[in-house]
Amino acid sequence: MFVLNKIKKMTIKEKFIFVFKIYGFNFLSMIVLSSISFLVFGKQTNRIPISFDKQIITVFGALILAPILEELIFRLVLNDFSKIKNIVFASLSFFAGMLFSYYKNDGLDSRFLVIFTWIIIIWSCYFINKKVSISKFKKYETILIFISSFLFSISHFENYNMSNGNYSFIINFLILFVSGMLVAKVRLKIGVVWGMFTHFLINLVPSIILLFEHFNK
Image (cartoon, rainbow, N blue to C red; front, side):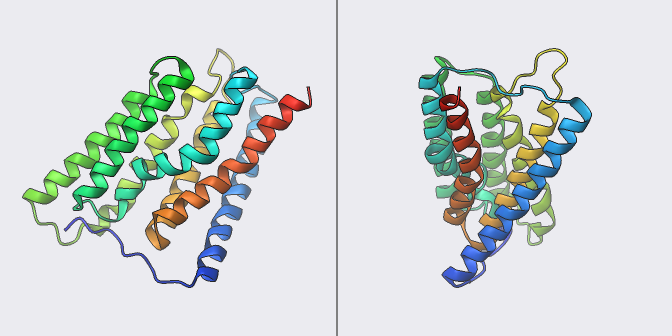
C-alpha cells in the first residue's frame, strides 16, 4: 500500500500548539531568508504591480481559496496514494483553481503546466499502487514531499518580478519551498484541515501588508 503516514492523535490544544510552532518556525525562516536576500541582492521589488481590484482578488485567493485548494491539490494525497477519492479531490481542486486563475489573470498562465505535472504524478502513483504491492513505501515519503513542495513553490513564480537583474525571486522560491515542507508536516501529523489553517496563517501577514501598502500610498 502507498500509505506514507498515519495521522497522530492529539488534543485540540496540542494541535494548536503544534500548528503555531510550525508557523513560528516558518516565520523565522522567512525573516532569515529575506535578510539574506537584502544583504545579497539589496532592496528589490519582487512583486509585480497590480491594481487595487486585483489586490482584493489576490487577498481573497490567498486567505480563502489558496489554503483550501492548494492543500487539496498538493498535500491531501501525501499520506495515502491508494485512495481514489483523494486523487479525485486533488484533480477537481486543480480545475477549480485554474478557473479562478483564468478569471484573475484573464487567461491561463504557466502555473497550469506546473500543477498539472503534480496531478499526473499522483495519478501515476495511484495506478502503480494498483499494479505493484509496495510494503515499505515510507522511505519515499520525503521524496514525494520534496516534489510536492518544489512544484508548489514553482507554481507561484507568476506572482514575482523576474526581470533582468532581479534575482530575489530565488529567495521567494526558497521561502515557499520551506513553507510547503512545513505545511506538509502538519498535514501528515494532524490532518489536511489543520494544514489549511496553517496555510491561512502563513498567508495572513503578507495579505495584510499588501493591503496596508495600498492604503498607505
